[in-house]
Length: 273
Image 1 (cartoon, rainbow, N blue to C red):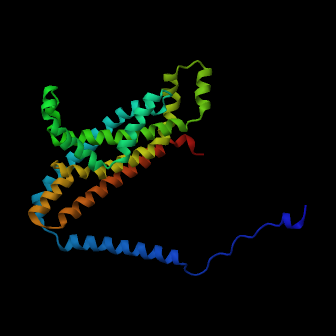
Image 2: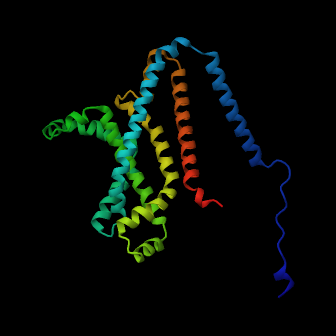
Image 3: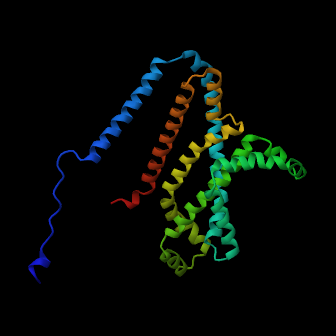
């Protein structure tokens, strides 16, 4: 073996001084800090007790509507995602094709457009919906929002579930079959516990995205958190109406993020050495 082949390449020399990326990073961090200080200073200096006393109850009511909308939509979406994920993994071309079209449409079009299609589109079929007894449900803007959000998140949750199940090695299925376990038993006792660990973080991201996207329903006259903020600003023309609602959304997102991280640490204790 030649000396050239056995020569070990030296690592590149350590960068000295302040490179441009480091300077830009510190500059952006400083700008964000200044922005946060400016927002806090504005809220302190422009504190209006009358505004807070007048609109705080409405904000709390809107927060309840937002939490209800997101919770119901996520649960219904999770239920609907199971047959959609099954169709995506099915070898039947008809089932897989229908499931693919469903996922493709709801992931490829904006949630705002889907909400408009449900709220305004179904309203065009009032007579037909009354004939089958569904108009009492779809005439409520909140129900239309839940329906649109559930269909949307079901498409995303189906892809999360499908990817998590397919990430489990094929040997797990073969090992369970060698023990005489039925496919449903294998899925429930072996595959899903492993798949849910993989899917937890994407599920958490989907939940956070749904919380932020829930502000869309304010456009269809649902007085959620954002809807009440719009009403407060229309009556007071005080920008605090939107600053406070932004802070509430930020707090909700941080609580959910830390909650998902806590659950992940709890269910992956056996994987840490």
